[in-house]
Length: 177
Image (cartoon, rainbow, N blue to C red; front, top):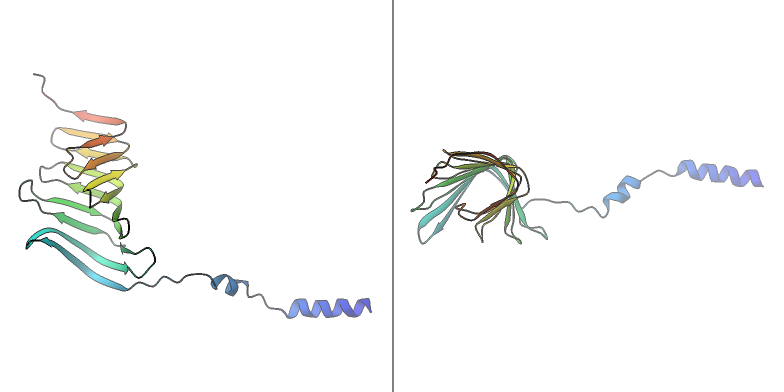
């Protein structure tokens, strides 16, 4: 009788198929974008004045998710227009906009070029458009005609008039009065 139960157990054991991978997929959420746009261009205007133009080879819109966002997987370029201070150009290899927090994450070869010729380069920078504030904990290079500064973080307003950095290393040219 014992052998009979062993044979039945072995038959049952080998007759069952493993569908563990299918079971894992039950609770997996499939993320499908609302839309995908190639050669994306967005013009931001205020009172019929162009304030900024965002251009990207591709935009993937996930605003249908619980935490809505838009992704720019092939990079982006934003030009901010200021009639007094001139244009500022921001570019990166990848970008993502989180709509609930209103934070923009720029990743990979992030470059910010101001109208005065100064620039910032970093592997990643976050931008808060409501506060017009830039920040990162990554290494940056802040350069201009008279300086080339390396720092290990950045916390600054858009015009860089309020600027905090971490440990500095670089060259400065200044006049002694």
